[in-house]
Length: 406
Image (cartoon, rainbow, N blue to C red):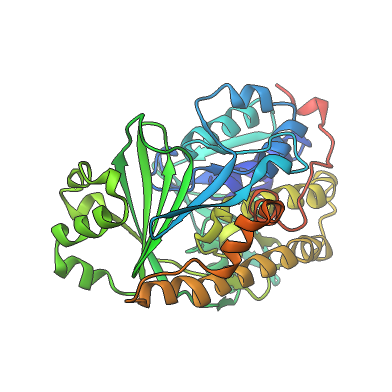
């Protein structure tokens, strides 16, 4: 098989890049190792910056017809006190909210849009297992499929295959581990119409518990110290239930729904980034280039922004057959600053706030920064801007090639 671009990974970064490149007339194949997009406890937040990209692509109204929840502010509970932490109503975007939608619905929507272009192909149950290299350059990839192994010739292989990227490993790209003092337990607890709405963070003595409103259930993240899962299991489910009840009383009649540890999934938090995102013929984006902490829920946003920047820079040289190493370097330079800034902020929150909160045995006091957000509501626009739009937001610059449309 011969394409101009082969993308490993059908997550938000890979699917968005595949769509944008195909829209620009580049022949592209996205290789997704699973048979579908259905995976539990993946990030379900569609940020205002991503909604802005969908608007620029002319599909926002169609997208918002799909079932979703709209989050216009972020609230937090410290002890028994409820605080407003971010207000999205003043963002310089068309949509002044975060849309909550199962990630598989978002990816299926993107796949449908991408398939409208003759130069796009999506191959499921196809895992990139090796790279084809010669003369110091990557020239394609080896793919394991349900029907056997295939080889793909490509001018560019993009690793968008997550934080355990096979592409970056096979390319020999060096990963810098930035450290993470926390892990996260993900779970579902049913939601009643009388419950509060939106995105709620809860903090009390030794507990950090985040709840995401998914209409008929809460998607919950229970933050734990790194490597403490065995100790939590040893204490047993009743003790785990008690900790949730004590923090969020209105869930008291529902925590018993978690009647097996198999219903509580461990996310091992990793924060890292590549020292160099590319080598001749290969580029990594999204989690393959920089695994993010769940703090702020901005990982998907950054991945999609990577994809938009990569398409803007690479579409023309790929379509004309003149891709150079300098083009790949431009993508890294464009996206490195936002990545470093966000990761530095995440590490600060992890080390100076979350770790200390988990270690506390005395009553938790409201941090001064949170008090300022209550005293001066205009300050709530700052975290909203960082979470909702990010550092150096990307916009669709590459034009659509009419000949690529089916």
